[in-house]
Image (cartoon, rainbow, N blue to C red; front, side, top):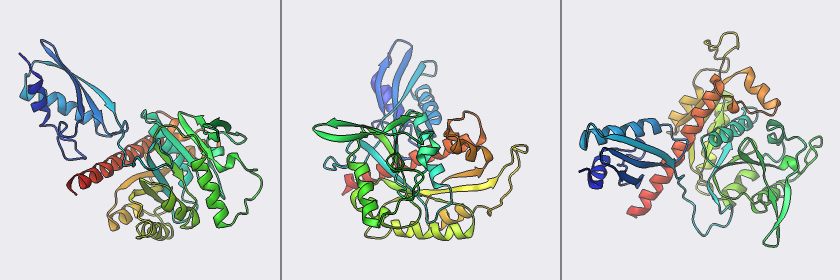
Length: 362
């Protein structure tokens, strides 16, 4: 007779490749069901974007066959429960599990393109995702999502007016660009811009989200300080290009977020415009901005390289048309964004587990 104890003991031999603990200790196995010649259970992942879910599923099947019965039928259902390090007392964005800023030391490195496609790619995995365009002076999200004249709805919730983000491509979208005239320059001093940003956080009904992606302005100014001081950030991903002038500014951004008065974890580096691939020569790579500068910078600061995104005409065109390229199914560039999204989600899950372990031993 097959027993639940046998199944549990077998799965103790299966380790989460990222968290380096067995699945039973991590409480990642649920709903064990045993029939005469079959075993089924649920494997609960820390994110639906887990890049290793196929391997983990097969490891579970192999463990049952090795330690229980080589002839038993094994059915593994995959689900996810996105982890969070939010505290119950935190009122800002209470229903959001993870808040990730996308930042860059300088403009022109494609930060908004990265933020938009990261949000879409995470949403395609089944995660609940929001995107906040916090680039107060140069909001790009309305154009990139085909919402140049959109205006969000305002409703009364518990007697207070709340802005409702606009659903688009499966994610919740909000931008300062929805509230201003796109043809006019926004002439605000730093405190005014920071107050406007906090209104987008506090006066918006975001609901329950697994990830909120924040597209920040370039540089290291008032907006970033406001985020650090008033928003419970999970971490920040730095965007750069391979060229030295961009790397120098990315290096400053990493240093800023690691300063004692800010202390936002840098979850990794994203290298944009890594190489040029012409449409007529899809197998060719031309390193027009330098080669692997982002990889060297990531190694220098001991942070993961979260992704390398090529220069492809389709990425620019899709943004101009309001259709983020991550929506495409089979293109090399959409695959690059999906891999980047998986790595970002992976690093967030690792960070959350690491903090849990630290608190457990404190």
